[in-house]
Amino acid sequence: MTPANGQSDLTQTTLQYTMLIGATGGIGQEIARQLCANNQPVILVGRNAQTLTQLVDALSKDYPDVPLVSHTCDLSAQVSQTLLVEDLSEMTQGHGNVIDTVILNAGINDFALLTDQSDDTIEQMMLVNVAYPLQLIKRLLPTLIAQHSPSQIISIGSTFGSIGYPGFSVYSASKFALRGASEALGREYADTSVTFRYFAPRATKTTMNNDAVVAMNEALKVNMDAPETVAKALIHFISTDQTQQHLGFPERFFAWLNRLFPNIVGNAIVKDLPTIKQYAKKS
Ligand SMILES: NC(=O)c1ccc[n+]([C@@H]2O[C@H](COP(=O)([O-])OP(=O)(O)OC[C@H]3O[C@@H](n4cnc5c(N)ncnc54)[C@H](OP(=O)(O)O)[C@@H]3O)[C@@H](O)[C@H]2O)c1
Image (cartoon, rainbow, N blue to C red; front, top):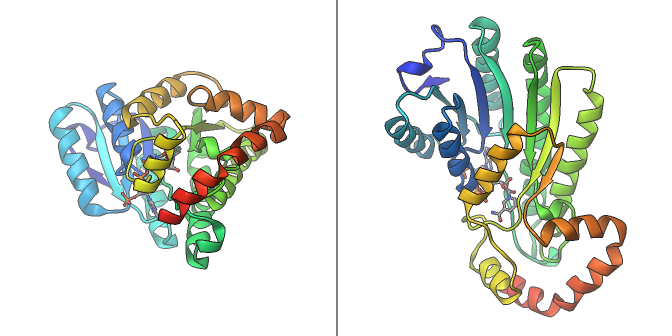
């Protein structure tokens, strides 16, 4: 765990931290910035050491008084997850800090028809978006519970975690699973100090969406949010006691409608299928 500035000397401070996994991505960087702007002590976790250092340097310069620590972690490596949790345990049990919020924001996507996707891509999407977050939660829980202080784990889902969408079948599967896991864990650990929450952005302007996705969204008049908008909504969500939030209208409405009347939503989506297929083939 690397303290990024004098305020984050873990041996001298006892603070309440928000930990952000996937801090170096498009939405992650903006969440990190807005947390710092709110004077929130943060632990930024990223896979790429160089990008993480650049982010930490920029934030330390802009927010020199905000306690900020960083940690590299590739979720695909068990040892990397274990080292992260050991450091967090030292931070909390060893030095009395509290991690009150964990944001699970890492994720990958691939816009393509299933028949055009490699087995490896299918497997990686399910691993990064579901299995690794669950493994990390499993490792983190003893540390969070041992704090004897309220804490929350927020999973970043997607509109496609409530609406199965052509060209995103594996991604939809992974985010449906993540939403289900968050709900189940909330119930499984209801007798502890840890709560589980789920936050679902709609399409957002980051490099996760390639040119084909952006062009398709333009053609279908699908709204795309700025990462700043998503981060702002998440920061507000953290301060509420809602279990789930789905961003944007009409996406929120369709997520609700799809639960009650999936055929209505399905028929509307299938009308766009030729356009979706055309762009998926270009992806
Ligand atoms: N963009 C959208 O339209 C949209 C819509 C709804 C929901 N979301 C969700 O929002 C979250 C952030 O997405 P984004 O748009 O900001 O995408 P992004 O810019 O591609 O960022 C994804 C992040 O996940 C990290 N990551 C990927 N594999 C990892 C691994 N094995 N270990 C650790 N970290 C890993 C990436 O690390 P590196 O920086 O090292 O690559 C990156 O920081 C994701 O969960 C995504 O599913 C996005």
